[in-house]
Length: 420
Image (cartoon, rainbow, N blue to C red; front, side, top):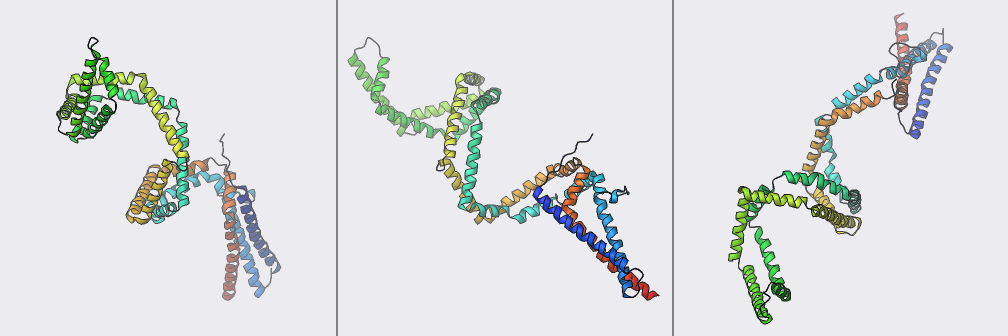
């Protein structure tokens, strides 16, 4: 047995429509009764009353014919199973399919969609709306709130699963040597490593200058046990002085032999990672040991937790750096939308392209909703709902039929009088 879906509606709006429909039915029915009364009252009279009688007779015919036509859409007139009546209850599925085809052929066309998107001037309206400070803040507040909620939904076990089940297996399968060799080679060709070397040497020199006691302690632990302390102190002081001077020379001389040697070593390492099987094998073993180490998982979770707490805190703070940055970017974007026609044209074109793509790819599924929804409706209830929405306007057909019928009746009667 078929299962039908109830049609939801707004009770208040339905009550207004039902009252309007009832009022128009009363008007149309009242005109029919008036025409009948006039017809009976003028029956058998000639002259002017003969014209009135003919008009009233034709009015009744027109009113009854149009009442039959309007009623036949929704139900059997007088409950009689006249053929081709109660069209909507009996043929709602065919009507739904026809409506689906009509919408698809006349509304979901590329030219129509593209034209309406461009005429709407979406980017200009968005720019004008976003230029209002309150609106920009509303957008930022909403984005920040949603982002904070989304971050809160990501638990540690989600990150653990991502690392263990997705990232680690993928890293195991992917050879690391070509990637490292390629990155290192590109860095060497672009001299990107020099900045890191400069930073490391400057920091090392500063640390050596500021921490002579620590250097002395480290070197002293490695001195022979049999050497006198005074000799150790002089040797360590000399070593510390030379170490500071040597690191200072490296810092100040871009062409220092140590820098040249480091460059040569790094270039050779890049080549070996790309071409030498032994180096590649050692790199893969090192990668596997790192991936198997428990600290990888715990570190990933800790980093994510720290990042999430920092982002969430800043997102929830109205004066936080993230919100302020979002607000600045929103205002800048609004300014560009209002002052750059080329940007607006490009964005409107992208919106039109996206709409056309969505319609071309999913338009059939969208219009099919019409057919599928109507198929699930009960025929009688569907007819009642449709009549509730359009029945008031259809009553004008009955009213017009009554009036036009009367006029035609008078015209026919006049012609018949002239012919006699």
